[in-house]
Image (cartoon, rainbow, N blue to C red; front, top):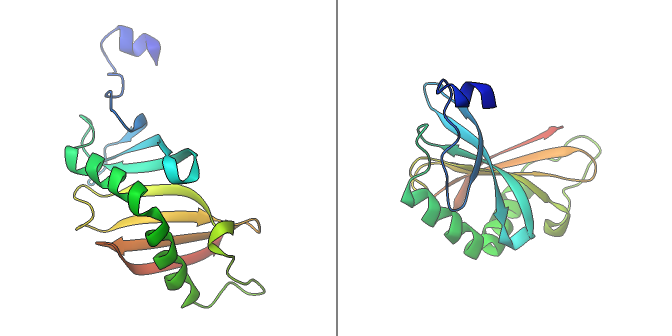
Length: 144
């Protein structure tokens, strides 16, 4: 990739104050696969940012910081939404503390456009909770 960049054939990812962009997907709804430090969990998580190749917009940055500030409330809402779904066969829903945040999907205009949190637990169950605004709108539970 460095050779392509040095020849001017491939541009490096844009610089960003929050997201470390890794790979761009130029589909009909383009997005960047990225990583970012997420303060509430004190570690780096995967972030899928719906945006053009040029990078995230200021609204997405503001949303990410607000999500960090609201994370305890959002996590509780996600857990309540997951509790309303039947658990996978033979499994019970883990506590909020046992849900490991693995990915945040940031829409192009959050929080008004749907965005998502994804978790995994120690038993390799994947939990996705989509939000509209700050309220859960749908959930998905599946084995990893």
